[in-house]
Structure formats: structure tokens, C-alpha cells
Amino acid sequence: MHFILILPVLLPLLAGAGVILLPFRTRRGRNGFTLAAVTGCSLFNAWLAALRPAETLTLADLTPEIAIAFRADGLSAVFLALIAFLWPLASLYAFEYMEKEDHQGRFFACYTACYGITAGVALSANMITLYLFVELLTLMTVPLVAHAGDRRAMRAARKYLVYSIAGAALSLVGIIILIFRTGRADFAYGGAAGADNGDGLLTAAWMMTFLGFGVKAAVVPFHAWLPSAGVAPTPVTALLHAVAVVKSGVFAVIRSTFFAFGPPMLSGTWGQKAALAIAAATILYGSLTAFREQHIKRRLAYSTVSNLSYILFGAMLMTTGGLTAAMSHFIFHGVMKITLFFCAGAVIHKTGRESIQETAGLGFAMPRTFAAFTVASLALTGIPPLPGFVSKMNLIGAAADADCGIYGWLGIGALLASALLTAGYLILPAARAWIRREDAPAAPAGRDPGWRMVTVLAVLCLAMLALGCCSVPVMNALATLTAGGTGGGMA
View 1 (spheres, rainbow, N blue to C red):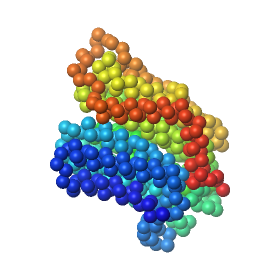
View 2 (cartoon, rainbow, N blue to C red; view 1 turned 135 degrees about the vertical axis):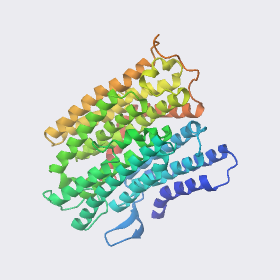
View 3 (tube, rainbow, N blue to C red; view 1 turned 60 degrees about the vertical axis):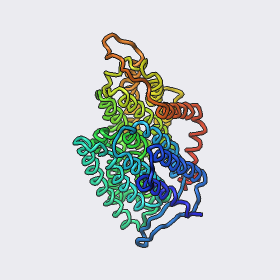
View 4 (cartoon, rainbow, N blue to C red; view 1 turned 90 degrees about the vertical axis):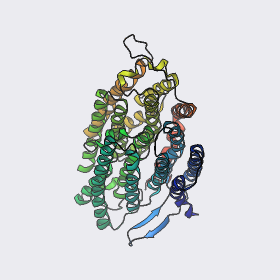
């Protein structure tokens, strides 16, 4: 039965090719095919995430130590569940957003194919397969970033590509050292069994993978590509910043840490301390920059920079509690942030306004959009009982319980300061949107977007409420899935 592990990768790639090659007579026909394909893939991925077959599917043995292989464990299930839920919603949103854009066939082909490549990241059974799919994701998303074809878009795509190639080179060196030092690259909870945490070369190799994959996760100082990529259409930036690229970078760091090198080797080393310090610094930098930024999409981009390091900070505690807390924010942030980006895209799409200052009083012209924006802003800030509160409290609790000394407490301070800053850069603009002001720009003629965008926003708001109100079973499920990656405990 292990052969089914290739289907989450293969089916979206075939569907993406079909978007280009099949002779659709109308745009509606192409969109219907795309939505049906993506929804079908999501239903299959949800089933696979629940089933989690124990076998490993090996596509090719490159050397005795290196293979291209897939496996579905607990961590894979978390990532698969996230993309299975969000990708059909993103596609439905994109149909309305892109209806007046050029080159829609190319756009939706790449957009759908990225689904399969992201699933490949989730299902990778070893570091080589993970590296391969992370880099394939770069190549497939570059055309999406450059979609507009103007100078700004091409510059942003080049910047994204340069940063990604540099990160890929660094992480590849770390992977090569791991293979030659330990003779293995496959994933097993606990990592390189028997490795001494005094092995300075392996610690340096892990730091290379942390920083290399950290480029995708937008750690400071390798974050600059992310705000620049905001020139892409909103359906692209929403997936870049909430689901596909950045979460693949975070996922790769977690795999490298817990399943390749291993906490027994890394805990207490200079590498762990450096990673915790980088994560704490990125949390503060991203929040401070978002607070100052006035362009709505760039503000959300810097917020993503900050929140990705929430996840990294939890994982770098290198405890089971830290990993569970990190994966809770991994999921919750995806739902909250994609909602915020979709709201920002709706404003830009309907009014052409891109500045935070221009949204004052706009809630009365676009009530559904700003209702969703308000809910997502409260959630990301951490207002109970919404999911952001749950994940942040779990992260703080895990840091307090971990034996990381001053680095754990620095992270807690960064999390608390970031929560206050988030209230400033999200809740205050949301509140201003509901206050009529005489000096505010005149309300636009447009109203809320059409039923497709509004439906997506409504579903996401319901999801946030459900995740917050049902946080106990959600956290119990995450604890089971992340304990050993398969539902078992750490040996």
C-alpha cells in the first residue's frame, strides 16, 4: 500500500500540466477543473494524514546512504492537513482575484503544481529528498512571484532566487557533512543516534542547515526577500507567507533538528544557543518593523517574519513540549495569516488602496472583509479564546519548562513584547476601520468582493473560532502526532 505515498506529489503535478494542456473552451471550465483537482487532492491528503501508512516508498537508491523516498509520519500528517485545508480555499479565492489578469493558465498551472511539491516536502523520508523538494518549490514559485512581468516583479523574483540559492548551498554542505560523519540521512526521531554533543563539526553542520533552510523561514538577516515578494498577486503572497514556502523552510529546520541531527546531540551546545538567540532577535525585529511599516502587505510580511520565528523558537528549545507548541503555531499561524492576506488582497482588489492610513473608516464600505480582518487580528495578537492565544501560551510554557537558561527567558520576553506590538500594528488599524472620521479618504464606490472571496473569508473565520474553542483536543492530537513523529514516545 506504500505506493500511494507518491500520489500527493504526482496528482497535483498532473493537474497543473492539465491546466495548460487540456483544451478548455472557457475560463470557467479551466477553473472548475482546477478546483475539482485541488479539492480531490486535498480529500486524498486528509485521508492519508489520518491513515499514515507505516511503510516507506523508495523511488530511487542513489547510493547506499542516499535515496529519494517518502514516508507519512505524524509530522507529515500535520503539514499535509494544513495544506489540504488551505489550498482549495486559496484556489477559490484566486479565481476571483485573478479574473482580469493575463496569463491565467500559466498562473494556475504553477499554483496547482506547487501543491504537489509542498506535499513532497511534507512526505520526505530523508534529508536528500527534503532538500530536493524544498529547492523544487523555489523553482516553481519564482514564476508566480514574477507573474506581473514588470520591473518590480522581476527584481523581486531575482532577489528571491538569489537568497534561495545561497541558502540551498549552505544547507547542502551541512547535509553532506552529516552523511559523511554519521553514514545516514534518513529521518528517525532523536536524530543521529549515539552522537556526542561535543562533536563540533556536526554542530556546525546543523547550524548550516538551520541557516540555509532558515532563508525560506525568513530568519534575520536572511529575510529581505520576503517583503519584496509582496509584489506578487495576493493569492501568491498568501501562500508564500502562510503555507508553502515559509512553512516548508520551518518544516525543514524542524526535520533537521529532531529527525536528522537530533536534540541529544544539539541540546546545550553553542548551536542551540545561537539558534534561540536568532529566533528571539527575529521575533522582535519583525514585529518592530511591521509596527513602522505603512504598506498593508509589507506590514503583514514583516509580521510573518516575526511569527515564523515563534515556531522556530519553540522547536529550538529541543523538548517534546517545545515541538508540540511550535507545531500548534505552525498550524494556527497558517490559518490566521492567510486570512489577513486575503483581507488585504480584497481591499487592494476592490479599492486600489495599499496604505494602512487609507483604511480608516473602510469597515463600513467593506463590512465582511473587515469583520474577517478584525477576527484574524485579534487571533494573531493572542486574544483568548482564539488560537493565537493558545499557541503563544504553549510556547511560553514550554520555554519556562525548558532548561535553556537566559536564552529561554529572552525568548519569552520577545514573545510578550511581540504580542504588544502585534496589537499596535493589527488591532489598532482594525479598530480605525470601524471609526468614521471626517478627515478619512472618501469611501470607495466598491463594496465587499464577490461570493468566492467572501466565502473563503467566512470559512477561515469559522476555522479560527473552532481551533480556539476546541484547542484542548487539537493540542492533544498534536502532542500525539509530534511525539516521535509517529504517535509514539521518544525513546
